[in-house]
Length: 427
Image 1 (cartoon, rainbow, N blue to C red):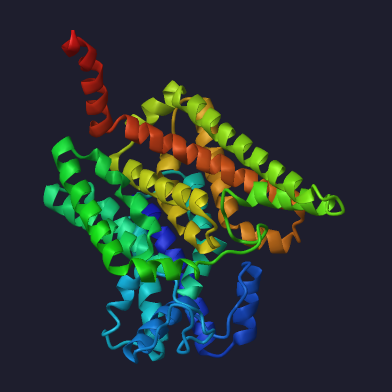
Image 2: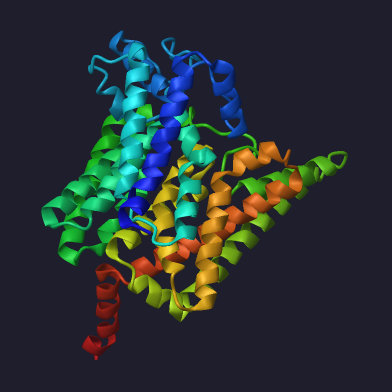
């Protein structure tokens, strides 16, 4: 296949769908527009770009001196503001709810254009999987809502691109990663690329980042703590993904089944804790087995830097979100960073490695379409269980990829060498 086709087909397909949906809405074909979104597994709101509207509403009310953390009267849903207070410091920018459509459209268009920066697929099956991921429920949901995670994805993508440049460009990339962390906290995981630096550069950037985070906490800790209460949580069987979903829902079912007994709650927590511990141990076992898969380590070492850096960034962000708490489905857009590297690994001459990586890529695509499949198939407990196990497997693989990246990093290799020499020096 032509390289240009593989590089631009995902962005071109997404742009075509985006323009078509924009036309339907503009021409007031709301029944068709809403019906398509519902088929995609997305509950339509009364207007597009709801989430960026919430950020603009927070700016609008903040300029009026209103405390928007717990209640925002400028927001159509009166949602409290749960993101970083740093963004509110920019409330002087003369934008508000009236600019929702323009800002949402530009943001989504920029995101779609940025997809052409990702490493292109090289085989037909890879292209089909990338197209399926690009047009998945998670991605469409993020764009339909114009969620802030779209901005954070762009910053992470920029940091990954700059990580392949010279020292000055890499420092700018680390600055963008730190900025995204200050805006929404969880993108702090993007700074994992810092481990590619030599010890001196690593120490300098790490100290600067720690200083910035300390100053940020000192200035805004009260607002940060108040905002945490507004972070979304919900049932364990919807589009929210998290490590806690499977053990907590099973524990809740056990507790409800034993409700007549006074020991029901204790039994539920015992099952929850046991399942969580068992799943965590399974993750460690999988990571250990994969770390001993010599062909996988060789294939990772031979990956082009672009595929490997994006794969590690996406894996770190998704795995961090998975264990930190519940994340709404659109945060899965960071899986787009994982896919190119995983598909590159699937080109290996080793059959077992091809099956492992290609199968895992298919699982990730199914997870990205998860809410659509759940609603279309009227999924019950069985489908939910498969989805949760799919998340645990995918995150286990991502952690193995991260572990390999860290093991081969100059920092840890240097530390291992230094520690290995210590006994010699002490004699």
